[in-house]
Structure formats: structure tokens, C-alpha cells
Length: 249
Image 1 (tube, rainbow, N blue to C red):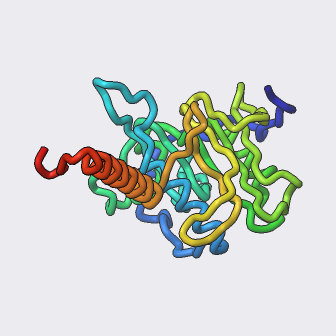
Image 2 (image 1 turned 30 degrees about the vertical axis):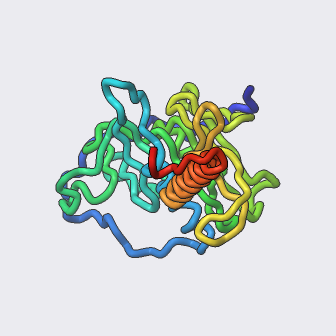
């Protein structure tokens, strides 16, 4: 189900060409992230992808698909165009370059990777970021398939999570958070991440299961091992009641 179609920027799609002089381009400006929640939310989204997702199109023959997920990395999308810096992005079928210290590999240059990211996520910090106006229109214009707005303090609307899908150069707001083109979903989750209880945005698979962080996977494995140990102890106790010493088996 969908809601109203939103217009894109007027004009042609930016030309995806390499600037003549990368040496004149600023790829890092050391600007800090907005706030602690934003920083943790960004890390949660990126960490869980690398911790639990096998990538798009994984199979027995190809058990892991390639992808690149990053936070606060500039996306250069056109000739002499200033970059846009998503709080988080996901790009399929690409990898971090081996020579990532090279000037033309330190940011996400569309002409180097050959494509724009499929997903962009913006976390609203104040009412001046234009996440639901200028940025929304720009992401649609450059061809990002899915755009997610997280508004934890309701600066721009009464809705904490909004998800958009690009159709014919315009974004349509989805009533559900399933991103069919990348086989992932986003949804609200209330819980504890890195010792802080809050309402977070989490990835999930088609079945609705969350993509776990490394710490969550480790805890899950610890609980599984503990349950196995308890099961073995109960079995040993039952054998002893029958006069059988478990160690003799």
C-alpha cells in the first residue's frame, strides 16, 4: 500500500562523470556527528548489516552477496556537484576498495563504484536539515531507490519513521517498511543497545526477524550453550537415578 507521490527536483539528472581534478575536492572535513543518539543509531544500522546479513541474492553457490554500508560518508554523484552525506547508506554489489586511502576511493564517488546506493537513511536532529524537502528531492533525483527518514524527537512530523520508494523519478511513501528491491525491511524496535534503552530503527528479514548485532549474536550463542549444558545435566541426573554413571557411557 502506498501514499501520495512526492515530486522530484526539476531539471535533468546530474551527469555521472569524474571531476577533472580530484586534488581540489574536499573528501573529509572532520565535522562531528550531530548527537549521541544519532551516532549510536547509525552504528546499529551498519553493524547489524555486517554482523548478520548475507547480502542480496545469496545462495548455496554464492553464500554471501557483496555490499557496502557506511555512516557519514560523502556521496559524490555528479560533475562539480557538492556531495550529499547520508547518515547511513547501503549499496549492493560493491565493496570497499583495496586502496581506500587513494583520493578517488576515500568517499563514495558514483563514477568509481558505477552506481548510486540503493538506500539512504537520514536521522533528523533539528528542523533545519530539510530531510523531508530538499534532501528527499535530491535523493529521488540522483536515483536512490529507497529513502528512510528517522525523526526521534518529531522535529518534522508526528511520525518517527517514514520510508519512501522511488518510482519514475519520484518518491512514493510506503505504509510498510519492507524494501523489496534489497530484500530488507526497517521497523521500530524498543530495547537496549550498548546499554541505552530507547526506540531504535532496526533492519529485519522477510520473516520479521531482526538482523542482530555482534553482541546480540554472542549472547544468543551463550544462551544456547547454557541451555545445552542444562539439558545435559538433566539427562545425567536421570541416568544416575537409574543407577547408570554418565561418565561410564
